[in-house]
Amino acid sequence: MTPLEILAPARNAEIGIAAIRCGADAVYIAGPKFGARYAAGNEFDDIERLCAYAHRFGARIYLTLNTILYDGELEEAAEALRLAERAGVDAVIVQDPAVVTLAREAGVKLPLHASTQCAIRTPERAAWLESLGFTRLILERQLSLDQVKAIRAATSADLEFFVHGALCVSYSGNCYLSEKLSGRSANRGECVQACRSLYDLVDADGKVLVRNKALLSLRDFNLLGRMEELAEAGVCSFKIEGRLKNISYVKNVVREYSLALDSLVEKYPEKYTRASFGRVSGGFAPALDKTFNRGYTPLFIDGKRGKWSSMDAPTSLGERVGTVAEIRRGASMTLRLKGLPEGIRLENGDGFAFVGRDGSVTGFRGDLCRGAEIVCKSVEGLSEGMTLWRNVSIAFERELERNMPERLIPAVINVKAYGGTIVFDAVSEDGRKVSVTEDVSGNETARDAGRMLSIIESQLSRKSGDFAFSAGSIESDGALPMMSSSFLNGVRRSLADKLSEIPCPRIKETAGSPSTAKLSVATYLDNLSNRLSLSLADGAEKAYELTHRKDAELMRTRYCIRYELGLCPVHQGAKPTGPLFLLNNGRRLALAFDCAACEMTVREA
Image (cartoon, rainbow, N blue to C red; front, side):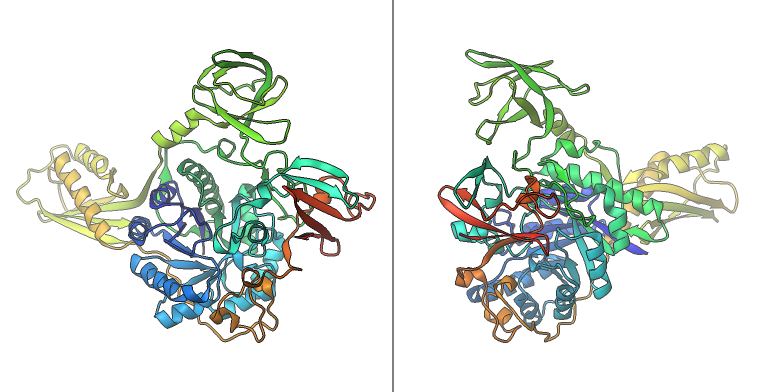
């Protein structure tokens, strides 16, 4: 059977633990440095604590060491690998191929996963990365199912695919827009998210075609209903984006996707299994629309172009709650809504948002909510007729905090009573086996055998520690001895303690066998930024961050502004537009359209 995993993001250890409680099979988290989310670093003591918790359920922890490295950082990166191994990390997510050499030279045996920042879009690229020693490939998000299948056919490495969360408009690893505009490189974990900024679209004559829109901003990814197809295509890890997201986002999204994966495994029990152990039950009911999102899209998964933009709202708007019918201003502001959807109840403290006439999104809190009326501090830019959205439901946030699900590993207790001795054998779902033997020769014989059986079943079929016990077979060579509830409870707790002393088995990858395979041609798009990575190709060009070459593509993407605006001459029969440019605060970017590949590029004008 193929083990499948829900892979959750974690900004810190607390969020990682919450993700595992909600059903994650694995968590990815950054160490102190070299993670592609600069603001999400963690000390190795915290990572060790997270590993200890995850391993109780056979879940795995992946360290993100997924920035490009400069020569002066190589030794520090090697030390990070050593510390990760000591902390109990199960694998390392890597962008810079120099890490393969660093791990070998440091004697670190951790498996290495090739980050999506490695620009894995073709079978050839995938095969080369596997030849370097990567055991897992994290694929580009802008791929179709057919392209995933082609990569599966070209490599034996595990495949990981994003299924939910924010989307980079550029092909991953090949966006240099942040570096160009601010000197902060996305490949160094410092992206300023220039794709979420507002731009004007102008033609060669300077005519403004679109004003003040987030023209490069995409909706969020959502493939909740496509996991079966992805598994069939060869994906084993379903990844959720969001290492900068808060704990409520991670809880909600992980729970929803974990339930979907449970359904898939139940549908095909002969083909698939979960990659970790324990069953999650109870707790809040997940609702993806109540968590941060810019609207959802399946992107290119079907190999078809669609409308993917969130240009009107590059941040989360949430759920529509109506139109502003009336505004009364005074010491505070009172709004009356019309069109409040049935079933939506506004609560004091809810967060709201609207899109202003200048295209910006403004948020505010409702201090007092009464039916369709909201009392709040005065908010500039809001006027009658505007659509209002709720982007924070205080009731849902409280539910996520107060009503957590419970994750327990099923275990069966079998009982054998013979010759004054009673043996309790426990077997957990993951195969751990322990036993407790008690001398009951001095106990009275149970007068009512049926009632004694009922007490045994009742007291043994309870939870203790990480385990949900159930009574299995109960055998006796004669009359059952009397056993109190407290005695049986003590036995159950003892079995739980003994099971906990045995490490929960988990999938353990073997580190790959690195080769000396070289790239035949290496350009700035390969992001080779140090002596070790540059040695992978003869005459390799250095990374953009080191050269800032003038003619570089700052971005290449399947997303097309012309298509979004109905201006595509190929798919929509529109008239040619001529050259198009993006303007922002005096900065001018040139758009180009590679219609043969159905891709758009952004360059410095």
